[in-house]
Amino acid sequence: MGENILCEKIPLRNPLMFPCPRNKCDGSSSPLLAARDFACAIENPLLQLRSRGGKKEKRPPITDHSSRRLCYCSIWNVAAFLFFSFIIGTAYIATDYKEKMIAGSLTGFANITQSFSRKSTFNLESTQSDLCKSPCKASGSEPLPKGIISRTSDMEMVPLWGAPKKKKITSSQKNLLAMAVGIKQKEIVDKIVMKFASSNCMVMLFHYDGIVDKWKDLQWSDSALHISAMNQTKWWFAKRFLHPDMVAPYKYIFLWDEDLGVENFHPERYLTIVEREGLEISQPALDPAKSSRVHHQITARQSHGDIHRWIEMMAPVFSRASWRCVWHMIQSDLIHAWGLDLKLGYCAQGDRIKNIGVVDGEYIVHKALPTLGGLDKKEISPGKPTTNDRFAVRIRSSIELKIFKNRWREAVTEDNCWTDPYRE
Image (cartoon, rainbow, N blue to C red):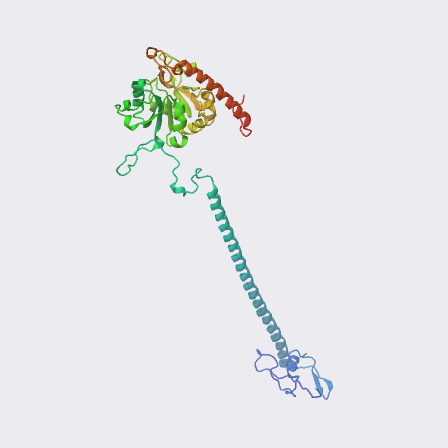
């Protein structure tokens, strides 16, 4: 450490290089060589120190302008080096940070995407599960794939042989005429059916006297459905054979008596009025001049207008929607359905004042002939059971009316979830 260190200013060969490259300094082999370069770089041009034998000697200020410029240049070069080092380092750090941020963002986006994908998959599975649990399938059809389930049917007959024929008219465009008939009214029934022949109407006959074969000579008989059960009313047949799912393809259901005159009735015109007025439950008016009996005067034809409001059970016409409601209201054991007409407003699919009516523009005649439960007096013989007497039928009907009213009253009382929309 007792070496003499001499640091003299040596003109730079290249001013762009570091100001003190390996100058001619004594003791170049000294361990302080590295410190020398740094000392030379920051040397004060106004004060030079010389070390000789441990003594410090003050040198006069440097007056050489070239040497001063070189020292200034050295300082600026060092500053420039440090500045560019800072810029490069900052750029590197910024690039590294940016790469980390991008990597983090990509990772975060990937995590969000994966999370969204998992949620989407979960939501899809949940939706599919909810759809599978939805009450789309009819009770009892759960083990079957949805596409094979046939929920409705119709009354169309299909031939035993040949390829299935494509229907020209879909069932939804057709209507259904259903009547309880006896062979004694064959002629009247024939006229009624012929009125509907051109109106795309399916015919269904309920034979309450058990006689079916004697109808075969009528031209439309083979295309009609014949169902036979002894001494049963049209309401008994309707409850058992006109289930809403069976008649769902039909737009309107005519559930008529057999003793009606239809000389002034036209089904197409009638339905035009019904649809225009928005009637869900209707019936043609009765001609009071020709009808032998009008049960309710309000059902009699009125001379002004096309419709007025009321309905009876003699010749009702139900829309598809209203029939689904009415069918559920028919009591299986109350086969005369007395009192049912008083509650039809609940099945009117809305305002019963607007949606139920008698069509005056198309009217019929009630002949009041002895049919089910009634016999011609000349045919009554001694010993004939009194249960076949029409009077006995009316007594049974009156009893059913009381039963129906009681059941309605009890149902209203017991059902806490039901609100009467027509409460007085």
